[in-house]
Length: 212
Image (cartoon, rainbow, N blue to C red):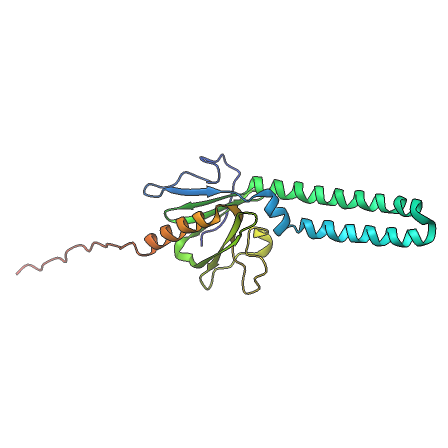
């Protein structure tokens, strides 16, 4: 797997740190769905639910001590806190999704990620051992995870949240929460299969014939 590149230079095309070399074509590009990313990676609904339960619990305790009026006075600040936390998480997920561009070419996959500091990860098909697709029928989004060949490692912190969720046997880069994930997976599968099975032709110079 090639080293990652910091995108300090002008991108020749969004998501690509430099022009593709001759013979390599861009097949697909996409980005995470912000709402799906907020729910699945940032756990926005879980955070809001926890804070809401906390607000109800504190309000019920206040009701026992001071009645309905006191209960409402205690509940409202916690409700505001829950809504504010949910809004902040949604904004963070939106920023991360907007900054991320996933690409599939005829030779590799490219992940341009990072809201504050943009970094590009380039993974040739020859460094991918397998790919898996997990879809969410309700939202219509899905995640394509890339299992790397042995010896290839990427830091969890360098990739998050663009990685396979809940997988403890090595970090797997992923196209996270993308719309039309099944179509992207088919494009990836076809391109990788074509590239890996591409015949390699080598030319050998004719051996010199000794003079008689």
